[in-house]
Length: 381
Image (tube, rainbow, N blue to C red; front, top):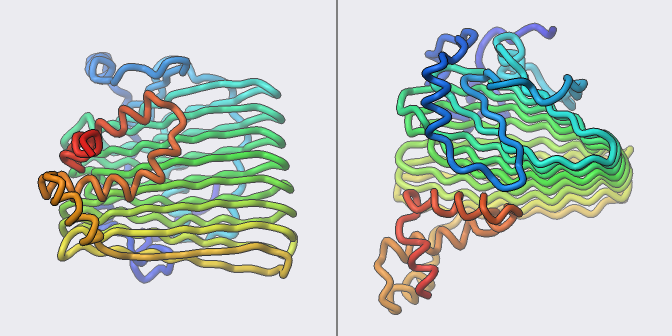
């Protein structure tokens, strides 16, 4: 096991300059205690209706309820990471008390819903292995069932085999006092297809650190993410994607909204190695400032070592369109609802990527608190 870095990352570390780790700096990290039968019953009673056609697995403070799904796959190797980027990954490996292992056999299909609940300080871990031609639709939902200052340090590792398909829908809706940090690893095999759709709301502070390697030729990745900040929340993400094989393709999209005094940040690092001729990389990073003291930071990075590449990137930070706002107000829509409707339209590029209609409807309903009146206004326009 690798040595744990001496201290937490800080804003002085390049990939962490926008992350808010103040709450974690004061935390005491230790293994979680198993949930009692009373806790399990209370959590089970509070769960949303299951998705049709999906197996459901529940994790409470990192413990997998019931029997793990299958045997353990091999974990992928992180790509060109530095010590500080590995801090929470190594912390999770040292303190995790259970591991959810998902294995899909050759040319088999599975649909799994994973519900993650944190009631204290937890280190949930999910390891995924897709054999050749396998398909997995995985819905991962984090539910705010505690109002305490909980801490979640999540690790997801996935090996996507040749010509396999992974669809990962990630819905993180944490309580207002929560601290959420996660490390994601994806290892993509030849001809594989991976789609990640991620929505982050709630939490006093959240941080996503992701490492993706296109290890096999003609692998394809779509990464669609949205973050909605309010109050004094901070949502930060660093996603590093390495194109290491011929014909690798990436489409990356981020939409962030910072309201109140919140801060939303996204750092997308695309690397195209000399071993990846004819690679394609497309980035679109956009943030919306919806508060006088809000802050947004988007940073597209391209690191290219071959001439045979198609690469494009765009990054913008702006405010609500005053002409569109005036138009909606002129149609009799209240100002708060009109503002919410414009915000809704801004993140709909990401929400529309959720392929499961029931999940998409549940997410839209849950956003009514963050974007009040948007659904009603949309129906009436």
